[in-house]
Image (cartoon, rainbow, N blue to C red):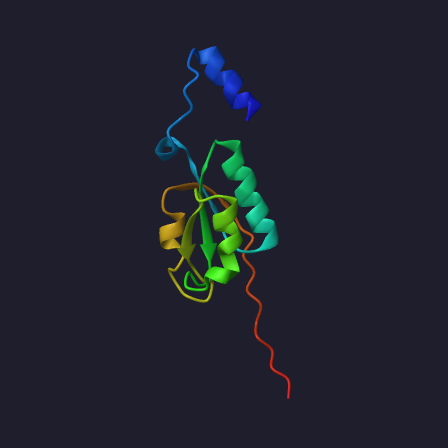
Length: 109
């Protein structure tokens, strides 16, 4: 981000922060179109660590595009219908982008 580079110059350091020092932003539903774009923007800014949630870590096809976009996105399995499943993904997060959507399954005969 241009603002961050300017601030580092003003402070007298050109060293970017180590990734472990950056604030964490959790993006729910990271496998979706909108959420994956948010993840990409956050990673490209260089100002955040990104945690993303997906429903099933075993279903690699559903989020393989995230690994291609950026291996820096740390993924967690979470589901709104499972109590406490977001706890690990939210641990340490300074911000959450809620883009997760759970739709009920409707069966018709």
